[in-house]
Figure 1: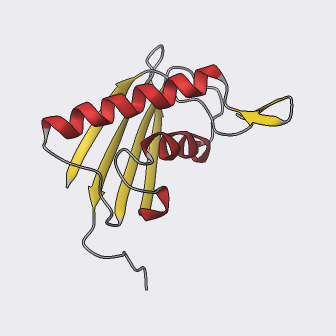
Figure 2: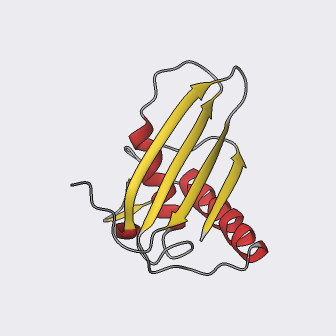
Length: 126
């Protein structure tokens, strides 16, 4: 399985995204909406290609375009995306064995592209 999800918009950072409400930890509304939106985009893309949830090892590449030159960490984007695709593209994000990313700046434009590929067996870097 190989496919790409292209989305216009910003990725909320996983860093400091949980809030305490009483005695419970809750996700902010913005994060819940992001995860639901990305999951919907993934499901539509997968249906169009007749692809189901996989239990195989996965390679995930993230290409992000930031609309301003503020300093941002790519690893903070991964948490939000991996959580949103959990149970939608793969059974669990522990199946991701290869993770890569790139970022660039384009004034006023915010979008990201997620390339996902299943691997036949676990990737070993020996």
